[in-house]
Image 1 (cartoon, helix red, strand yellow):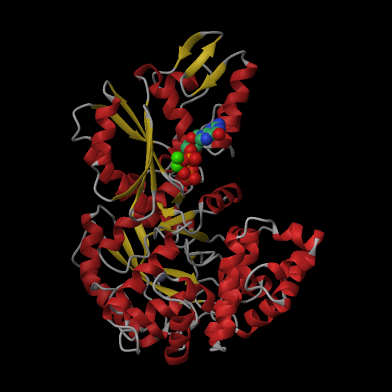
Image 2 (spheres, rainbow, N blue to C red):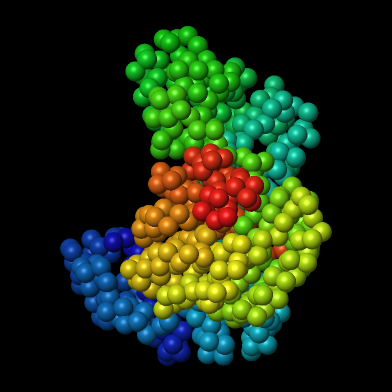
Length: 572
Ligand code: DGT
Ligand code: CA
Ligand code: CA
Ligand code: ZN
């Protein structure tokens, strides 16, 4: 154990004691001890093993603290700390660490507002309840909100959709520099991964220094991390790192290939090159000293007798097998999508009317839109009961008389109840064009319970699709404990489909789930789950994940016109 680690333990004890309102002298004793130990030049561990008595010679360390240091070094823990942790609500420690807070303020927040998690703290700040507490104020409240964002962002991966905005910004800025001959994004962004660690750009230029000067003038740079002759790294204020590399024109394809990755894909590629007596790196493919490819990616893959893989497939999953068999799939595209099968309106928690949603879908070139508002169990969203649902369907019938090229489908997002079963009578569900089933409650149930609920729902004759199948929210909520394999198998058995929800924080099924559905022959429905007209624009994020799962137009159910889709489900 290092001195710093021991000091941290003492600091934590001080924090927790202070949170509990312990005697200030006791709190200060631990805090002072932590500071002393952190600045000590001799190793506490050595002292404990060689001469424990010497611990008491450190200023401010008496018999009690000396014993605690010895115990900590020997056992790795302290009963006092464990005890304090047990007495403190779990989330409070996170709350304390938000910049601008601390144990005392965390205690006030807990006592006055019951705040014991970052989420509750965010809510309390947003509701402007924090500013009225003694010792706080509007400024503090604002600072806390920023602090929560920062704490939450640190160490997190960026949603692809957010990364995409950054990339477009950066491209826009860099293209204003006349010394930039070419700039292209690479890395996980280019592969369309659902979240991105950092952004990677490659540039061709005759004047690297001028390009980097220009790059450093990008809005939103918080810090320049490194700058060399050909590489520069910065951190943006929102916490994302951006790497820019200048590469020679004759190596641009090789560099794009290399820096697009993935690492696993590159490892396989390097092995294949070696087997052909070739060497591959970010400068090109070489036979001996001679560069035989490098200007374009096609050329690089070509000399290895490989197709230029779509970036989305470069994960060393199935792509090399497909290439060996000469059967690279033709991946689904946004333009293949004919309709959207999951959207909400202001009848429940959506923002727009039926008519507005329909017109927005039509303008986006869709032929059909399923209005799948929530069922009554979702009371927070004013979920529909049978009566209101039928009234909505009457209005849909009326609206549908307007269009020849477009159709609203009578649908509903029916909740799969905690105890099992669906939230609407069978008779009503049987009248729907399309029934979306989903789990919103009882997400903490066991794997067996939750899987059984879903498998039973898929067996219900009215249900067409199981929506956002794992319930994950990227950076926020892990998947529930569902057995996806069992769910896919019953979807197969009952001739049902599975949703790829395109919301950028959901992307659920994920790419691997899509591949699993494809292998079993379960059609995937790429849906928007739009709660407003602009919510319809997320479709492309879903399509990107479907491509990563290797899905073709055939594998995606809603590439079909509605009559064909009905046939696929065995309905007339
Ligand atoms: P990220 O940023 O964590 O979402 O993932 P990537 O894939 O963008 O990874 P990053 O930014 O570390 O590097 C970009 C690409 O560069 C990566 O996909 C493959 C290539 N690369 C980086 N380091 C290595 C390496 O050590 N070996 C190989 N073969 N390739 C590497
Ligand atoms: Ca990256
Ligand atoms: Ca990088
Ligand atoms: Zn929904």
